[in-house]
Image: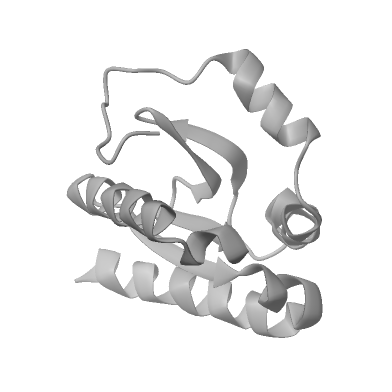
Amino acid sequence: MPDHYNPRMRVPTARIRELRLRSTRAEQAAWRLLCNRRLGAKFRRQFPIGDGVLDFYCFEHRLAIELDGGVHSQIDQMRKDAAKEDYLHALGIRLLRVPNGMVLEHADEFVRTVLDAIAKSSESARK
């Protein structure tokens, strides 16, 4: 993925399906907590946006959730993550970055963090 996002490029559907089939343990755990409106909001997983893919996205609250493993501490990946965050911000989408460990080891903290982000987006929408 380049250091910038190209909104004209689309991620092939086959790639999205592959990402869903090969989801990480953390993504599987997070999806179990987010699916079926368990937290009061509808999330989609492996959601294509621009020339990238979001781990989870909620249209209603314009909230993206990205799970970060060890690779996200590498310089090249940090640049890509910053570009993705800038792109999402320009679209009016809030990005919540969550370490994989939080989802796998502290699911209750993950749920609280997501619920807080949803509440903040609701407050912003009312203003």
